[in-house]
Length: 624
Ligand code: GCB
Image (spheres, rainbow, N blue to C red):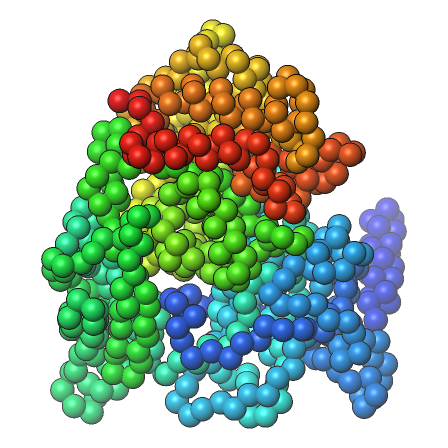
């Protein structure tokens, strides 16, 4: 009897559930594909920009998929009830975060639907990819009402083959972007930065031939300063070779790599998978360095496709405690950054923001920037190539991550792979970083070990790093940096906030830094907060003088550390953070910037500048 009553109530609940699902909200169809391998160097391809004003609908209750916003229906001409109309809805600029474009979206976290109508003329024998430089955090793309693909991860690009969904004449793309935070995302729930949502980087269509150059790596061979090596991968090549071999005898596709300025032209044959490997001497190559950021025009051509790029050639390695750039020891005079626009609120994007932000780093006397805590816009890394700044690039495996969840590891690997794939030809990048400030547990160690292994498999030419805050104070005068993660790395970063989160700046005067690892260290963060224009005694927190005092003592102490090979204090510019709520001082900004959010330089800026002027001449901080 009990059993029958239970069955009856389950049945009633099921009927009630059905009744609540209106017939006009069917489940969205499954996406037709996952993003396909990234196209290398979209900027030098034939593209149709979709940047500009997109019509948008805020979907705080996530009903847009059920209401089929992706159909972009016209309420005036559709039969039935259509309760949305993109064409009459307000717009948001793309690229751009939504938070800084409308006051009511400053704190919004959830879904926004974007729509863009455009005319397009497909060409014969051409494949057309939809490409987004970044969509924070989850994106689902529809083309002309059909599901194209989904992507997760807010700081890396993705592309999907839209050829079969595009048509002659008027077309439309609808994208839902959702930036709700979850404990099993990368980053996780509470990073110390603003969760800027939206289509934050360039969006475009990319046209390529049927058999096209998908990806390539052109760099100095590991350990060499005069030999260039790499590979080119064709997509669709296997099929092309097969059909050719059916007609004639088996035929290899030839790839040509040219560097006109060096009078180099080399040929290589693609194997059955469409990959061609090459290596050749380039004895006259001028090496890229911060002092001489020489870029060479290169051209890669297959039978049907060609692409050009600008690449700087430099070597990077570690020998003992030294970081060698082009075979010579280098001291990294750095600053850490967030990707926030220099003179307006919001995420930075494009060349102009990159030029100003990196220009400030140059004014400081930097030869190095740590791009924390996620991969930046490709405009930024290309600008670093042009301006001559060495780069640390990292994925947002920041503090507390769900280390035991295999899906989270997959997400981290995916972001790492997308970061390295996009930027593998940027000479400026010398360091890939796999985590920032994670607690050393066996689960964390296993997770980061996998990431280091993945990074090395993807790129054997760069150094692998991470920022740790795992150190001990065995007594009042010493810091022992000890994190098992360091065993996996080439160079390790130390984040320490003596003078701000612990102790006083003067404590540093008698400090010794030691570590059981025989590896070069970069102090990847130190600092303290100051509100620009607030002055007082050096002992008064939040004043420019307090921050300046921290810098003076830190720099004096660090220059004595025998294994120090670089510094990147925290941080170039004040940045928005929900953690920072002190009224009248922070007002939603982390104030550890050397420059305020409106571009005002604080006193500590000039202390670091002076230090870098002195050390630039010596290329060391006198620690040897
Ligand atoms: C850190 C974190 C960074 C924070 C900074 C701070 O150690 O790596 O993301 O913003 O400290 O200001 O506390």
